[in-house]
Length: 204
Image (cartoon, rainbow, N blue to C red; front, top):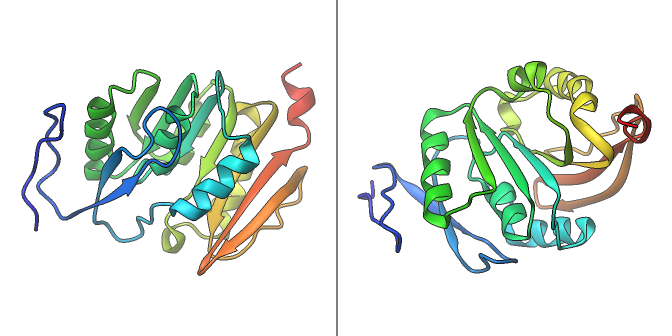
C-alpha cells in the first residue's frame, strides 16, 4: 500500500494502492493522473486513446463531453486537455470519485465537473446535451441489459452529430437507430465509435 504524496500543486491523494496514467495530447500532454486499484477499473490504454482521438479529430475545442463510468478519468481528462469546453465525469465508487476530484484540482481543470453518481440514474434525470459521450463500464458488472438501458437513455442527452465511444469485451451491434462508425480491438478490449441516427433531428 502506498502512502499519499502531494503533487506539484500540493494536492493529496488517497491512502490506497494507486496506478498512474499519462495524458497523451493537448495542454496537459505528459501530465500523469492517479487512480485507485479497484476491480474492474481499466484505464483506456495510450494506444487506444490515440486511436479514439484520431477518430474524433484530435482537437475537441468547444465541445461538451460526458464521461460515464469515469473510473481513472483517462478519457475525460484527455478530452479536457484537448480543448473540450465542458467535461462532466460520473463515477459511483466513492474512492474513485475522490481520486478524480483530486486530479481535477491538481490539473486546475476548470472545464471538468466530477459527480459522485450512478451513470444510469444520472442519465434518467439529466437534461444536458453533449457532443461526445464516453462509456467504458466495468465489464463484469455491466451485462447486455445494462447496455440496453444505456442505449435507451442516451439519445435525449445527445447533440446533433454527437458521437458515443464504447469499450467492452465484445463488439456491439446495437441496432435501434445506432450506427457503428469505427471499430477496433486491442487484446481483450473491443472499442467502437457510434452515432444515433435520430440525434441529428431530435435537437433541431
